View 1 (cartoon, rainbow, N blue to C red):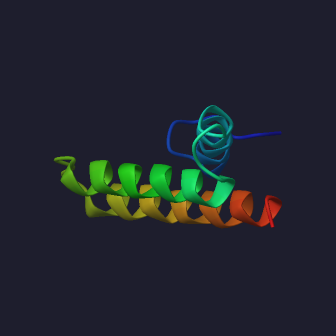
View 2: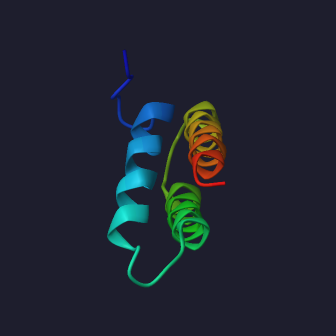
Amino acid sequence: MANTDKFSVDYFKEALRVHIEKSKEVLNPTQAANSYYRSVVSTIIHDNLNKNFELVRRIRNLDEAYNEVKAEYQ
């Protein structure tokens, strides 16, 4: 069963797939995934989180999701 909690690996995987699909007219899948990844990391880093653990958890989940979805397109 997929974990649909915000910022879970499954959440980011679905968001990456949606972004890739929406961008397919102008970007190849790797470019679209990279674009999404950079945008989310920038947003997370600039978020005023009080807990460093939450910041690390979000980035770790995004990274795992990115690697799994990128592998689907190779």
